[in-house]
Amino acid sequence: MDLLQLKYFQTVARREHITQAAKELNIAQPSLSQTIARLEDDLGVSLFDRLGRNIRLNEAGRVFLQHVENAFTELEKGKREAVRISGKYEEVITLASIHLPIVSEMLASFVAKHPETRFRFQQGCYNSMKQLLKDKEIDLCLSAPPIELPNATSITLLTEELRLLVPAGHRLAARDSIHLIEAEKEAFIGLKTGFGLRDATDSLSRKAGFTPNVIFEVEDPALLHKLVRAGIGIAFIPALWDMDNTDPAAVSVRIADPNCFRTISLTWLERQELSPSFERFRLYLIEYFHKLQQRLVSSAYSAGESSRSIIGLERLI
Image (cartoon, rainbow, N blue to C red; front, side, top):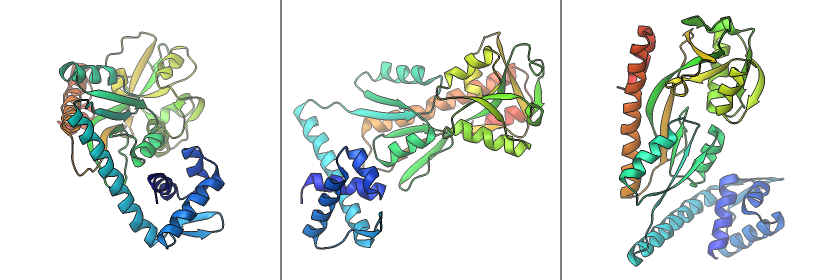
């Protein structure tokens, strides 16, 4: 039994799929199958139940996986400790986030105060970030809605209103607010399915009584503004994306019905220990988004928005 065998087993156990695990590990499927078979021979027990091409962790496999995960955790802790003692310690915080216009400002502010901290940052959709967190490839995740996983903790950071972004001159542009059903016949620009915002707005549209006619799908949320400005269609937009918008070519319109809000959450996996840098950054995020929530409320007051909108934004203050 060696570490490579255990790493292969860990990947297969998480995927419960030999082909997917082989692809992730970048090895041939027969080689992976043979490695797992040799591990089971060494242990003298079967770790998986095999039903045709499908495999499932059995009770022995689940128990063994828990100990393997603990072993790798201890090895990683030992590695960090050895590097720290050598004087070459440099902690890296791995963060994944949905598209948020404030990310660069948020990270720059923290790094200015703690220049010794290093980051690896990834931007992605809900499904990809959930897999990264599940595979322990990231430490922290900013998402909407919250990511639910065993042994993971999520807290709400911010509540924001969802609005409709329309071109200047559009029939809805002069309205203070609309009922979402009024946009039933409109052409929509949206993110691809799998992005949290797309799933949320599809659900809100169904609640209003229609399925949006999405004629243009994008992966880069920044394109939504450009395509709306070009007059291709209208789009749902979170309040954060619109907070400092001064573009005269596009106008955001409030949605009075149904209730259109989303929450941004912070999720992390439970650990036996929280490093000082990790905990410092986690607390910083909580404080940063609290102040951001206050800015949204102040913006709503200054814009003269309804009490319904302001009360919704004030939930976290």
